[in-house]
Image (tube, rainbow, N blue to C red; front, side, top):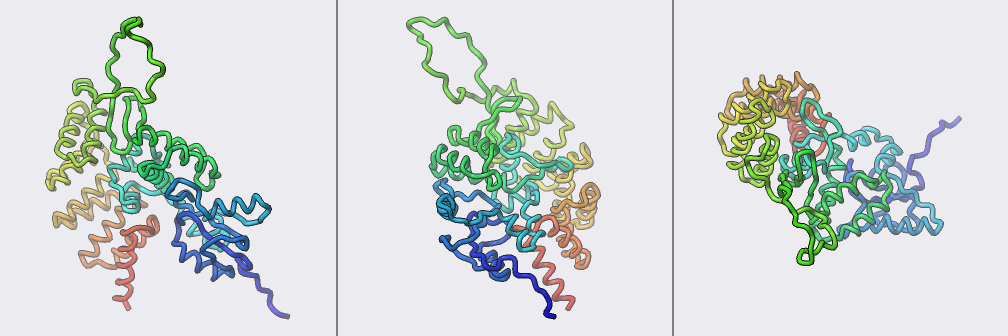
Length: 406
């Protein structure tokens, strides 16, 4: 009796892709379609049976419109065609790549996002402070973000800066189901971004601009004379209040901290240092202010002073993951590998899954000729971050180690 064999999962399917895939390139996805029995198509036609929508960003063109492929398939389906439109996660599940599915839903730290998006960490932190992006969770002060939300905020900003009308973008977003990046959250981000093409939001301390963290305040209220024929009442109120930077003697420690972050992002490092010091005059035990002052000192190439401030941040909060990791990196830079390993071990004791600490420890061990130990930490890093330049370096190091062993 002949043995029974199951058909390939994409047998008879003609598959096209739109949007940016989070797990692979379009060319790699096309090869997988062929390997699983289907036919990959660069363009859509009425013979297309499946359109896969990428998870990494919205299926929007540079003009803010839904992708041509998605619009065409939607039109054909409205005319009684039967083309399945699935998201990338469902496609991966269909061909049995569940590990890739989990990978594109992974959470990212600010440092990971900085490398992937080529956006300074300070800018990402400014977005978070203003509510443009929201961490899914925080682990020992370290925020973890959904990549899609952060990348979506960046895409919206780029579309607005390119001159695409807000109404066009909003219309496109409202036409996208939530599983393709639609829903209320991107509309909320668009609202923040679209006001004068700058992000402007209010928190309990006043107005801030998330792109750079700048804090703004209303003028102190002034007495308004009674209306008369000489002072007619305006026909409408301005959509954005008239704002000015508050006078220094009215600023709280939090205000100085946010101002320091803004100045640091703008490259005004010396002025940022003064802002963080003024914050610390009111809150001398604020670990984040010490940490950011250390970042400024490092930018000024004052390595020993920066190292001391990182230590103060860690003393004020012994579980400050980023402080311990920066301490390890600075000791490495200063030619003190054993002290670097001690600091990185503390970071990993606090949070064994902290990818950056694994990567830096692997690099120190590699430089010390302890390749087997380094390999363990490179592998641990890749378990948590398999994309971007550091992941590429880790894979290269592991491959060279394997060749040496052979």
